[in-house]
Each structure stands twice: as structure tokens, then as C-alpha cells.
Image 1: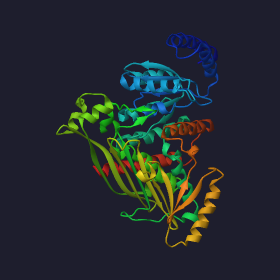
Image 2: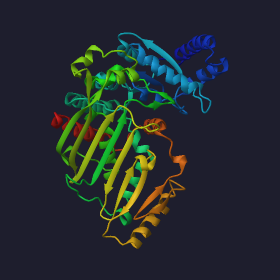
Image 3: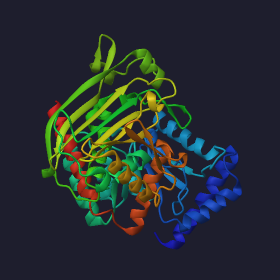
Image 4: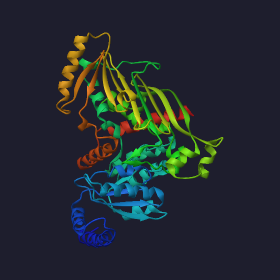
Length: 468
């Protein structure tokens, strides 16, 4: 589009926005003028495609320096869209660090085609019903748009074939495709990775066995929980694994990613590095009363009735896999419950077993449901040697994490992390988005990212097949 025409459209758009927002009281005239001026110089313009998961809004929990404040949203309309817009509004109107996003809404049955024809932005954010996610990714990449996608990028083995082609197309068109791996930014996980790279303290990963893996990662999630300060309302389709994806292909995406990221940092993996040993799936029972509490619906929809057993919904949201990665035994498990104890959220357990020490993250009642990292000495190492190595390792951490310390608790050490590093799961989305924007500025992802994303999803699809 010629610059003059683009400027005219910006001016008309700003005028329209000014009229609407002045009427609703949601922004001042000065803000709209400032937003229009920033839009002309913004390097990145976001497109939100079919938002149906709260993760879509969390990408916009904060502002970014070179991102246009105007975001074009394409959707068929309905409750998913309304929930998304309500969350954006809450970010815009909060007292601390309010955002100033301007949502331009485009609703129509052919919203995908309209987005591709309008080309109103250059970065597509995809987080919602997973039934069409791979299609959305492929079509967006084919159109020469960058894509930031929530997990999982694929639900079935057929989707994986399409994803492989999407990465090839992205390379040919010089655009980037990236999934939102928030858990890399959780501080205890980042410190676990860092300490595992210290041979004086950790040694090397043991090989492990199926019964006693070298790496174990277990997540427990809740259907009923608080997000952005309010009870989370789940869409009804979230309970349909044919749309959301089974548990073994959903949250396990994070866990398999962390195994690769921590065990082989900065290394490019191949599918031949993976050997799937066994995998299983099982359902979480959800009563109608529970379903009503989190969806607002007073009955199960027709598309879920095939999953009812004696009036109780059976959701195959749980999965476990045992495999080896370059000979290292790994166990990954994800399970869902309706809700946790009062004041708690999703929980995570992780252990990396080294020849000199184990690095363990626990998040139970003893930890007040906050993740805590422990360093446990291997009996083959003397207490003096272990403490000396740990002291040196913590000193090394000060360059990136000033204030991190350790304290002795019986026969192990607890890593104390200053509160400033515990930003919370919701803020991790902004951290991932900032990383993605940096990669866009640089014009490339790290060399290992794309191969390892494909290995990750291929690993999960192996488990999917085996579990069935």
C-alpha cells in the first residue's frame, strides 16, 4: 500500500476510533491521536485470530515499544470473543500499568479469509479452539505472516505433517513461526537448568531407567481457577478433546519442551534421538454441576454427549509417557482435576538427577503451593565438596540473578529466590512475546529452535499413537 494512502487510512481510522471511544469513555482524544502517531512508526502490528483461550489476551497484558497499539481481531463472534475483549478491557482499565490497546473487531463467518485479505498486520496471535489451529498456522504462513501460536500446534499425526510443511514455507518466505513456551521463564525452572550446566555441582545427567528416570516432570492443572483476578470461564468446547486436544498432546507440550531445553541446552536434536517406551491416557470425570460452574451452561452440549458415562463427562485430559532422549530416560505426566485446595493453582514437580547432585522442584502444601528448587547431594560426594561447589555455583548466578541464595535444610539445600523474580505465570506470556519480537527484529530464531520444535511435536505424536 502506498505511504500516502496508508496515512489517509490511518487518519480516517483514528477519527472513527475517536468517535467510538469518546462515546464509551474508554479513551481520551489525546490518547487516540497519540496512538495514531505511534501506529505509523510501529514496526509490528498484531492480528488476533479466533481468540478462544485466555492465553490470547495474556499476550497483551503489557505494551511493547515497537508494537502498534491497534490490534485487529478476526472472529466468528460469540462468547469466546466477548471474554477476550473483557480481559483486554481489564488490562486497559487497571490502576497499575494500564495498557492502551485499541481492539478493532472483524466478525464474519469467513473471518480467516477476511484476515488474509485485509493484511492489517504482520504478526498473527493464535490461541483458542485447537480444532483448526494447524490450519490457521498453515494459512497464515502461506500468506507471508509471522505467527505466534499457543500450544499445542498440532492435535493429531496428520496435523504434524502440515506443521512440517509450514516450517518449510516459513523459511522460504522469511517469516517466523513460534510457539508460546512460557515455562522456560519460570524462575525455578530457569535456575534448575542453569545449575544442571555446572559440572562441578551437578556432574552429568544419569542415564536412569524406566522405573527411575533421569528426568521426571509432572504437572497438575485445574479446570476451575482464577485468571487475571477473576474466576476463569471456560468455553464448552474446552472439554471436548476432539477440539482442545487430549491431555497427552496439550500441556505435555510444555514438559517435553523443558526436557529438551534443560537436558540439551542450545543443541539441535533429531527425531532419531527419541525412543518412545510406553504411553497411557485416562479421563477426568466432570459432573454437570462442575461443568456449569466453569462454563455457565446448564446442560452438556450435544458434541459432548458421546463422552458421558452415567451422566458424568469423561474428559481424556490426562496422559503420561516414558521415553529416552539420547539415551536419557524421561517421564512426562500431565493430569487435570476440577479444582485444587483453596488458594492454590496449577502445580509442577520436576527432578533432574545428576551424578553429583539432584535438582528438584516441588510445589506442594509444604511449599505453600509455590515452586521451590532444592539441591540434593549424591551420597558419592562429600558434604564439604558439595557445599563448596554449590557456593561457587550460586556466586556465578549473581551475574544474571542477583540476590539468589541457598540455605541448608537438613541434608539438602533450598534455593531462595527474591520475590522480584516470581512474576507469575500470566506475565510469562509477555516475556515470550518480547523474545519473539526480538527474533523478528533479528530476522531469525536460534538455530536449534525449529528442529527442536518439530522433535517435540513428533515425540508427543508418538505418545499419542501409543496411548491409543
